[in-house]
Amino acid sequence: MKNQDTSRLVRDYAFLPILVVSMAASHYLLGSPAAGVGLCFVLQLIEFFVKRRKRSDKRESFREFFSFKVFTNMSFYSQIAAYLSAMMYFCFIYFRNETYDTTTYLEMLLWLVPFSLTLWLSSKVIARNRAVVGLNLFWIGIVIWVLGFIFMFRATSVGKELFWTIVWGIGLSSLVAAINLFYNDFISVALIADEEVEESEMHRIADANTTAARTMAMLLMVAVLLIWRLFIPRTADDLLPDVYTRTMVQLPMLFMLISAYFALRQPLDRRNREKLRNYLDSKRDDLHIKESLDRLLVKKYRVRFGVRIMMAVVRPFLHLKVKGKEHLDTDHYPSVFVCNHGAIYGPVSAVIYLPTYFRPWIHDVVLKRKNMAMMTFRQLRPKMRFLPRQWVWGLSWLTAGIVCWVLKSFNPIPVRRGSSREVLSTFNLTLEALTEGDNILLFPEKPRETGQDTDFRELFTGFASLGKMYHKKSGKALRFYPIFTDSNKHTFTIGEPVTYNPENEAHAEKVRIANLLHEKMESLKKD
Image (cartoon, rainbow, N blue to C red; front, side, top):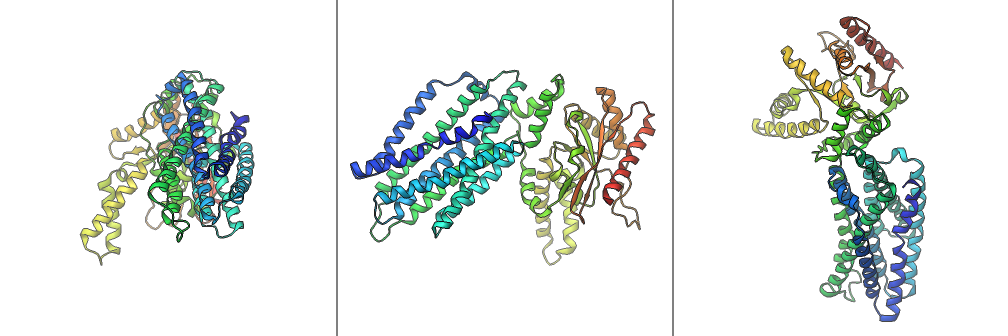
């Protein structure tokens, strides 16, 4: 599909100039452009039923994949919003003119020129940088699309209208590029379910979904025109009633919000996509990783999207420069990433900027809402004595609920301290995650001692036992990556890994790994 994404984009929106010409023709022949809209809708309906009769068996089997069902809704509602917004803008151009003549329809066609050029050029640029395309680009596309769409209606000059039209087109092409890439990814997802899907088959599925969305958009457009015509007539004193413009903006926005909801539920994000690619690039003989991907992408999987909201909110305030990506070796995944804590700065920056998939170690105490609420209350009470105690506790309980929800969205491995049995359960869960192909993120700094003024302390050595456990289970040497995040320099640096050596004595090897990682992290701090 890579070579045809741009041509498909042009073909999918080719109906817009046809719609304008039909409106103009019916206006001069029948005295109303509505007949042209109705004719285009009938032709679209015929196309829909023709393609529906050719429904693919593969498409029906794909509906059993949870990630594909979520994606179908993402694609369907976002395309409805896109098609509907373009037609609504035609209405806006039509209604804002005092007289309806050739100039009105020429204005619509002229508006299509920068819109079409923007779609074509931006799709070409994105096609050359496919590595960045994915769920993140879909979100970026939604944001840009919303901004361009809203301000396009508020433009007070031709220059501003042109600018926001271009912004809107860039957002739309970003959405389309992300959708097209997902279709490519589902060819790979099918292999997890032991199915073979040809690229031509995915073309037919994509065309069917696009046709369905375009048909629904035109149906909504016809319905809105009928409502306006029958129930909200225009008056001579009010050229463009407020209810018209609100409908033009709010209706497409509603469908884009629905699409955004399903995007939050999509398990095939950047990290799981990377995990899928790594599995397919290997010999595909690891049953544990296949079962993990099957559970994530094929079966119904509850996606906790708190982490995505957190990343969207927090990332603009960090502005960290990521260094050392070249040290990452996906051929030797899974691996363990060891980061400094730096109070809360280390964990927050690591979960946002670590450029790969992982599961973090998180102390089980902060994963329980009651415990978290008590900790928060102890922090807030001294600072909020002007408020009643019950109010501070209520605020603490609310805050704890949000924090626990976000933390659990990382799919963490609870770190239990106390008896050896509880500690062992953490290592067993970690070993299970490694076996399923998940990388691990942890922060093993020792607690600050009285009078200690350093912001980076020695590491516990216990975590390094994972090297022996993983080697015993898989026969592979586990790699440990040092990471140092610096709040002063605003850097997030990944160092060269330390590899477990099974020939060394177990305790000595554990100490060696911890000490060597500490040295490397100290070096990263100075760089």
